[in-house]
Amino acid sequence: MPKLLLLFTALLFGTAAAHTQITHFSPAAGSTVAAPKMVTLTFSEPINLRFSTFKVYALPARMNAAALTRTKINLKNDAEARADTYSSSSSMAARLDLPLKTNLKPGAYVVMWQILSYDGHPVSGQSSFSVR
Image (cartoon, rainbow, N blue to C red; front, side, top):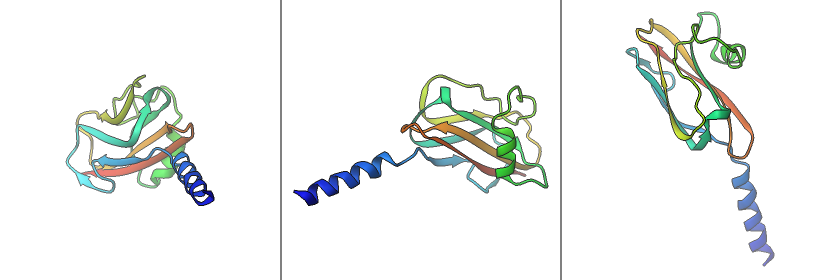
């Protein structure tokens, strides 16, 4: 019986400690593509979009994706500077399509996010792709 209880406890805490993850990107991280019409993110579980932020920015030549994310993710009223046209939603989703502005210029772009995981923990990150 103690072994069964130990196994159950390990499974319970192992599951509870898992945070929502991005399981698929399109365009793929690090890829070079013709100017896409949207970026698609697929999550490991549905998230509440109301408590999430998603943005796409052109990556300046002398800046890395993490630094750009730190400076831009919490900005308000930045729609003109962004490469996406996403507006927030209050729905739940396991997949999100971020529409992009037309005629993206060649160069690197950063997709950044800040989401609230199902277990209540914030999860943030970024991915990048290039337009040829």
